Image 1: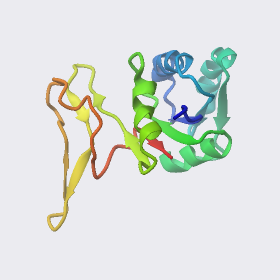
Image 2: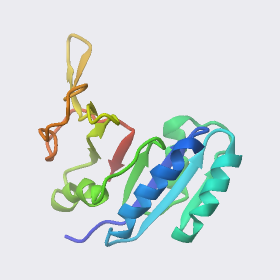
Image 3: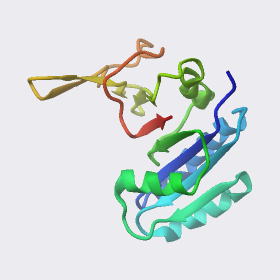
Amino acid sequence: MSFPTLAIAVVSYNSAKWLDKCLSTLLDNVQNYPAKVEIGLIENGEPAQSAKLAKSFEWQNLKFFAAPQNLGYGGAANYGWENLVGEICLVLNPDMSFPANWLLRLIEPFRHDPQIGVIGCKLLYEDKRIQHAGGIVKYGAALVETFGQGQIDDGRFDESYEAEFVTGAALAVR
């Protein structure tokens, strides 16, 4: 199956201090992606710093959107997706960075299973401990268990598996 086109919304709220690393590593991944990708930086707060940084990435077709007001995270993702074109929509936090081939690995399950509607990924803290690797809801107890949280990343969560929830910090939706 061919690679789907992507609409990627990076949602910012006065996050200029993280955006250079986020956008640089994301755009490195996009260069290796074999289908069309549109990226939008959506600023929910004060747009001046983010707009200046976004301008430096315009040559790579990054689009900048100043939200008309603070739309919240989900609202800003939707605002971005309304202005971008892609078969798969992604939303990303601005304080993230992405290893080589991250985007290819993230999208791969969509290519092989049309039943998949949502994909998340493992998130690591800077010290390589796991922040999030999906989770389950413990019904009746109103509790959740986040896989691997706080543990040193030893590769256990490197392959695709089914989870009841994933974080919106890096989320892909068919």
